[in-house]
Length: 100
Image (tube, rainbow, N blue to C red; front, side, top):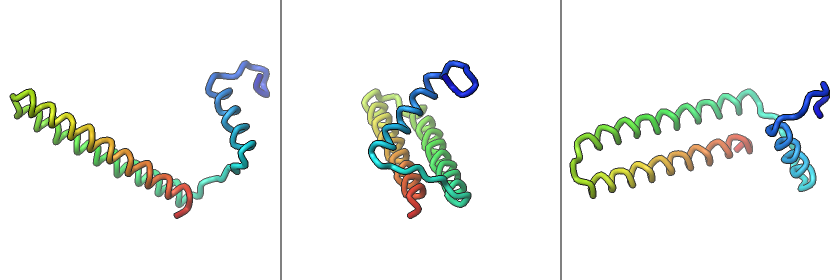
């Protein structure tokens, strides 16, 4: 039970387990600075905009392609681009969190 006597949510239980696991493995929690928070928000906004831009371009291209094989190639390229952008975003955010 939490401090106020109410039952804990699944989220709270999971967070407790993660904190305990981190403590056992020697990971120390660090608070983010305001500059890091701002940089994280900027990175998130930048990559969200890039993904949205790619979505618009993809939808435009899909409307122009009647061939199923070409459509499949467009879909494959679109998924690859989204995954690349998400990977870049995650890597950049991790560097910011580490203070690099």
